[in-house]
Length: 203
Image (cartoon, rainbow, N blue to C red; front, side, top):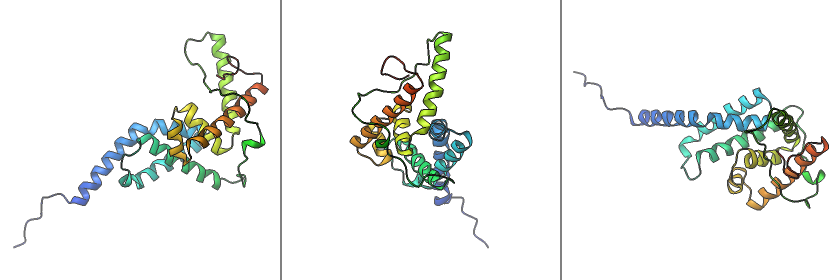
């Protein structure tokens, strides 16, 4: 007589189910955040969608190795940043090397931060704000990738300099140097178009 089949769940199957369930929650909680980040990096809807897909595919593959030593968002930003650089290198017509902002701007000017108000604006101010935002997007898209990534993470996503360093594998000094140069480049781009806000502060 055949022994009845075991009703105990297979440990591996249970583990996989828990992993899938946990990752599904992680995806739902963070997909909008990563899409916003991807869209700011790529500047194109389809490219942003590809980057989101690549990010979460790689995150799922490495999910069992994530120990929670960093915030989930920091971990996902790091995966997305690496995926973005790989996609940029593979893109047809991509430059053989990234330009350094040393070739564009000096570093002697003062510090500022890119901030654009979004509330409490009159219709005229809202129109000016829209023009400024469009010009800002164009300027940011001209940045070499490694500078663009620092600027987006720090000034647009609000990630701390320390976390940006963790995401990009840089020390804080290097992060601040790249951020400073990126901000100066963007400010000069906007100034060339006659667009400024509150003196030296942009946006």
